[in-house]
Every structure is written in C-alpha cells, then in structure tokens.
Length: 147
Image (cartoon, rainbow, N blue to C red; front, side, top):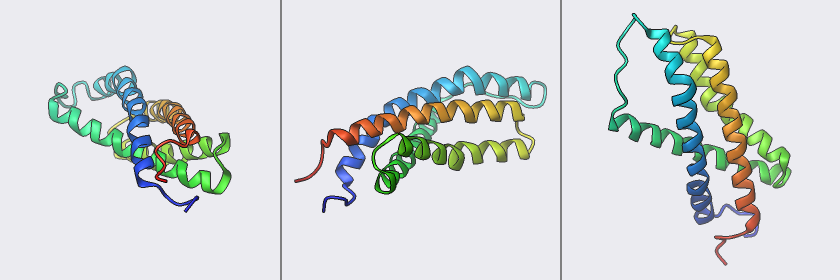
C-alpha cells in the first residue's frame, strides 16, 4: 500500500523530530516563559524549582506535541504533497491546536499575560516550523518503509 500509513516510519520520524521539538520547547520555556511567569506571579504565589517530575511531564508533553505535528504533517502530505505548503500548514495547525489553545486558556483564566502568550505562541510556531521541515526531509528519504 504505497500511500498507506507506515507505523514504523512514523515512530522513527517522530522520535528523531522530537529531539528538536524538545530542545526548542525547553529553550522557549527557560528563556521566555518561565522568567515572565515568575515576574507575573511575583507576590501572588510561590513558584517552586523544576523537579524531576516536571522534567518528565515536559518531556511527555513535548513528545505528544511531536506526535501531533508529525501526524498532521503526514496528513498534509496526502492532501498537498511533501512541500513547503504541508510544512507551513502542519506547523500552524499544530501550534494553534496545542500551544495556542493553552495560552488563550491561561490568559483567559488570569494566569498569564497576553504579551507572554503571543510571544510563546510565535516562538513555538517557529520551533514547530523547523520540526515540520525536519519531518519533511525525513519522509523524503523514504527510509524505514517496510517492503
């Protein structure tokens, strides 16, 4: 089945792409979000140090984010081909369906500021564009396809 979903290929591409997504998400959190959230909550509540359980949860979140990105990219390739349009659409949809929804809810409930949300969404989108580009290149190699 030439156009069918190949689970082995999907898993390998997701794991490789997830290296970048994890790096970009950790950098975005440490350099942008955490400092702004600490400033926002100063005097309102205590924010603790990042514990091992937080790191595990972030890793799981980033892996889920990558699974969503690579799957939406794969769907886009079926509709548009493996091209820039598929990269752009998959990164944009993934960003708004995950990070965008999170930040809109966070700000709407009074747990953040719009300026932080907008910047977090923008930088996540850049990271996911790169992630979709990585997935695109990996799919183009044709590796890991069962014969």
